[in-house]
Length: 309
Image (cartoon, rainbow, N blue to C red; front, side, top):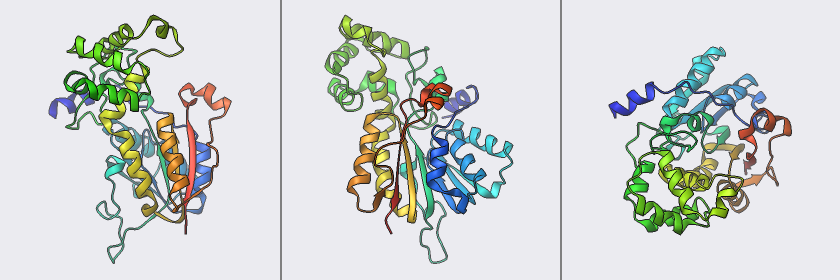
């Protein structure tokens, strides 16, 4: 744990540009005051916008300690008083109203006026080789959202898991058509310790024609490993089930997803759970101007629903 924290302190500064911020603010109505929950704080962009547009208070959660410190510094630099922001080092799947201090004199949970969730991996995580999220530069096969947490890393999955487990996650989380070939090639190439080693193994495993596509052959494998390491879809399912309990009647949940697996879960929950009233029949996407300014916003989709009264 001490080594992980020391490595964390040596990593570059965290800067993340939030996407679809104007749309999130428009749907959550912070100009009416109230308390909001940002379950994926990141660099603090959505939280800052909500506070500047009238929110009385924002509670921010993030599993990544780098993100928490970056958001704390950004909000302080913007002149946000400490009493208007409360930050927690926490996976949103583990958030609990009462356990984390949101209860009245009768011990009942105090609901929020709105919630924002900006899913997936952030630019600082992708751009930091030490985090192991990207194959563009060499780094350790880590991929933990919280690099100080005691949990399996991507290296543990690649080197220790049965080949059938790898096939399963490559299909389920990566929608990878060459999952079986890739998994068996990984098994024969063990041990693998770096992102570039894994990317090269995947490159060698796929047919030559598949190497000429628009995206690198390792893209879906890296996505699948990241989702598995951090149990991202299980956490999202928990959020979608619990969020109505955290909202006032009429309170809104805004979810930004970046791939079809996340978006399907959000769409299904909003349409099938009677506690939700869908406000965006079709997802909102970034404008062409935002995509030109921030290319990583191009796959973002925003869906919003309100808690039924």
